[in-house]
Length: 221
Image (cartoon, rainbow, N blue to C red; front, side, top):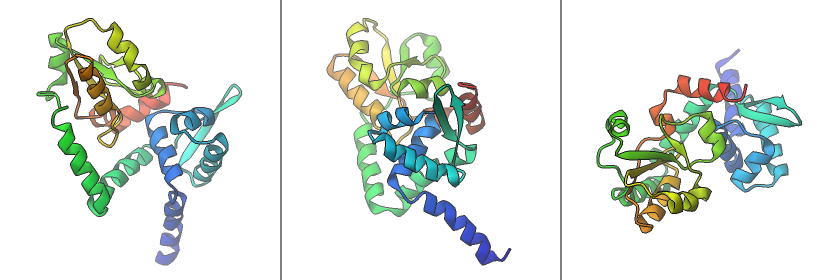
């Protein structure tokens, strides 16, 4: 195969990713395995649209699926996809002025949300002074989560706030630095009088890619 032929093949991967919807789908599948219906609900897209893009991603080798009863459960095909999505996000900050500005503004507003010291999360947990909540959806929490974390999906946060009578500090986290669910959760909890902070790292930041993928794969097989 000539070098030009080689890169012609490689370019097919780029074409498969040339869609915001497909990137959204891949990003979601990096967090958890999902059905078409679940993806449609999470991403607020029509089922037909999600199904169409999944077929494109499947034919390009980015996703795979397994039958589970009446449903098809989709997942990313390899750990390289997780790494690729993370690299693409980080690269967007370096190459795209708008993204660089967005992250700069987000980082500035996050200063008041950051936990004073989360360098040793285990010590914080063992001290009994904090409770860690995962504000991603249930599917993502079940796939992989930080040790000792409690699942509190963002859309159920108000119930948590009304029932939380503890004096411990609440540490919230979501999928990664590009996700603002934890920021919004901290804002809402502080408005309700709770002492709350955002964990700087995400699930994928705290758990190695190999361990992450094994947890995701083992969660439903």
